[in-house]
Length: 329
Image 1 (cartoon, rainbow, N blue to C red):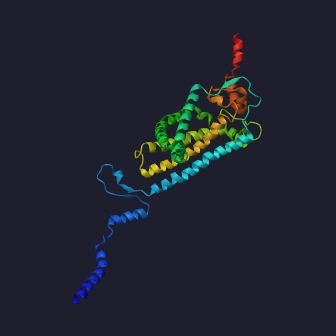
Image 2: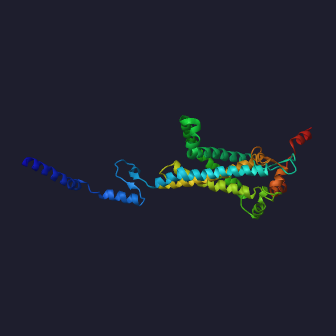
Image 3: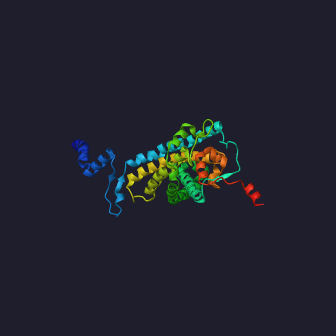
């Protein structure tokens, strides 16, 4: 009986001693642990110790990455969707209300040169690069939700891979084209008083009558500066992503991506309007960038001051091809 009582007493004593033993053997938080916790609480990166040469790998936790992920997955999708879809909706309503802008008085049959072959070639180089850059960039944001369900994972992987390759390499001719565009057209895109009057009159897009304008009207000047300045911002921020860690650290690249993507989707929305007006939205406009020759009545309607300048320089309108053939006989 005494033995049983002693055994029970020993068990009770051991049970009472276990919590104290556990507390005594538990590891106290080290200074490194405290610093890591403090870094997380204050939003600072948590660094570790490594033995490999690339010290960037010591960045274990970078809290700003969560903010960047939230921007890419949520904010950018909303901004891009509203900008592009919103512009398409505006153009649809405009088309239904205004229709296609005609040439007042019809075509004259006489043409005047608007752009030479180098200007047109550079324009199409920039335009083709921009379209591919825009589509491949939109795929990075919306492709997983829009394109992947339509084509499947295998095709989507191939499209995304080659799209990303094109996105990286076409940035160089796109930038070169922007430089040429700036040099070719900056003298004709300086804002002046005529642009204010053009804007007050609605640019001929609303109401009746076309306000006076030179070689480029206020709307086209706006497109020019959006293309040059916005394109420069997109190019610089894009190169920081193409060459990671060459210009800046991870936080700088995240900021570059935010700037790059926001400006890019806004430029895409603006260029959708530019493409519409320059093709199906206005009769006679597309020929300026295809043949380089525009109908004289179109030029007088939309750029009368420029026509007067060209006439004064002796660069008059060419007669129709049929008239040339008849004269040859």
